[in-house]
Image (cartoon, rainbow, N blue to C red; front, side, top):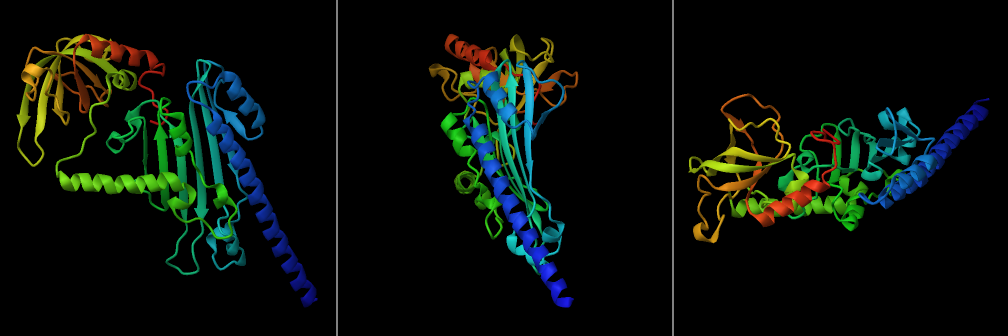
Length: 375
């Protein structure tokens, strides 16, 4: 009877292990096809019909909240692995040999006015702890997401590529994470690279443990940019800011654009990082900026170079009375006062060329105002 019981237990363990392995291969097969479907969508070009084909194919795993119409639809597809609590929470179990037990995959798409303007892919793996007490389990997270405006990511990390960013959270307790974020106007070839996931992590014998395992090309770029940023800051102890983007980019990307008149400018040289203090008076709204009235001044410390408006005064601060184009995000809080804090803003000389480029960019911003995909 003991021998029979031992054989029965062994058979159950082998069957369970086999089931888990088969399930993981099925999950990987589905995840690879979902990733291919999402990557093949081209932002700004793929249509409602393209989105419908994906929704029909993945209907068993997909859902949406509210209504889903060509005017606006957010569709989410979720794939979940079979949970195995003993394999995650008790490293002494023999099944730990089959490594990562828990896996969650999500693919999203978003349609606005009959065109696909958003797509995301997310992988979450539970990494089991080791046999020793100080080897705790944690989550391994990798994501590639579309953002409508760059206010949703750290622009200071994207100086060389203003339409996308790669990075990892500074504080991620109980997890390791890597991400890429990109606007719908990023180069499609670059977007494919930013959505490069290693789904071998779902089936390999020994579990993936680090960011380079799950999103290798993005993680290598993160490390390279970290090194470059540290070198730049070492060479110049002052804060490293990205250059002012093109007028068309600013017109499309920033929440607000106005024509303003310079009220005052000065250099504050106190401290190690001199700042430009600038204030402006509203002259004409070009894009939103409803919170700013003609009676209020706006501005604040600016990290931007607001010099070199013309060859005659190149290198000097913009003189009061000059007209400029200001592009800026909506402040988190607007308090009625004499002066409005614009925080981070970009300033351009006002001329016909810059105005035409800004207006071209504004025509491309078809997204809901004051709305971020991931606030």
